[in-house]
Image (tube, rainbow over the protein chains, first blue to last red):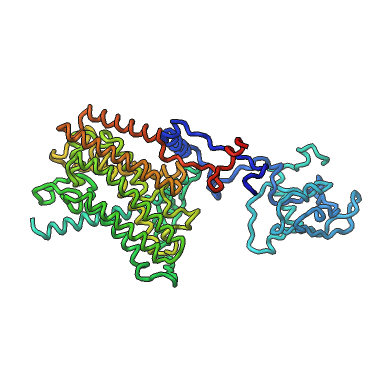
Length: 177
Length: 407
């Protein structure tokens, strides 16, 4: 870019007043700012002992869970919309014919690779029956890659673990279920 | 008093000073990190306590852990360095930094009777050295050799640039430092640091009160000499990786870092001794000629240490308060502001000392000192030698806003 380019806007430095030239007011200003911060409340959370507050669990994107309906059955209808929506391709579904009269298919196996997952929430958005949801559990750890591939049972257990603390999102958001 | 008792006495003091300074340097690193954390809204290191237990002690174990880590780390000597000078440099800087404390008092005196001595024992390793201040200055100049040699021997452009900047900065700021000091020397008529404290204690007027201009000049120059922010151009991380000690690791790096911290401690000691009255505090400590009890001696030491800690905390607060100077601004500040201000202060003090019997320590002379300081400061502000013309130029012609107006 040339200096005489018409797109360049030239800004002149503001002229310093006497107070600015004296340096002392600026000096005091700087000290005042640091002193204020020195005594102010600290934002650090000492993690294992203190837990951070999750602002709104309804929009937080943590570990997945697999919702159950009121009869305790898995809600999923094995429609593959979540696996299609997933940008990280971390969902693997095997759907078979459903034993129940209210739907055609249900997942025989449903696996999410939590290590591949980018926690974008697309699966949750895509799901037509609100079967898959993201909870506010954020400190997910495991000792092996295999352990981090969550199957249907594990995802259902996440539901059991979090259902009291976090009601199903869609209901409280005025959804269909 | 035989030579042996004198030697033993000196050795004990030496142990106290060397041990005290090194421990202080270790723990001041922790204080600095804590302060940095607090100012940035963090907690700072607070986990390391007693090893193998869950006791944390607010992170007081951190310096020990740091020291252990640095000692056990591999000490890499790069293949391209000048080995002899490379090894010598940290030793020079460390020796110079610690030796300064030979003449710096760390208290007043303690009574000698209980210790089998007739006279009170002065709390300084080498008492009564008449060239005290010159000794301090000589050694702080030698410390520059450590920096320059270290940077040169490292055979690395960052180290080299850091060393060059450092040498320019140290030489530039040694002058205002000396000028700030000269005012005190004129007023006390002595180069002995104990005597400087004594004069302030007897008159009850600290030199910071009677020579405010000299105080400002000295403090600014002391910041630059200790290479603390906003004057840490010798090792500004954004530009020079780590400056002159880029190539150093392990124990040699520790020597450099500790020496830098000791420089800061020395600067704090000098500021307190020369301008803030040393161990003197009104109504608490008495004059320099008074007989001292054990209680009085301890009170003096405590007052002294509190003042030094306060100055060091100020050093640390300043670090996070202002941005670093650009190098040309740094030089402008030294040569165009601090040097003239120092000379003005020197002349003002010389006039005061010549005209008054009390060496400038009575009320009208204090007022005079403040008037000189304010007027000199105002004049410098209005002339503003620090202002730099940052207008964009192509060749000789300015570009940008002025050109636009013309067109």
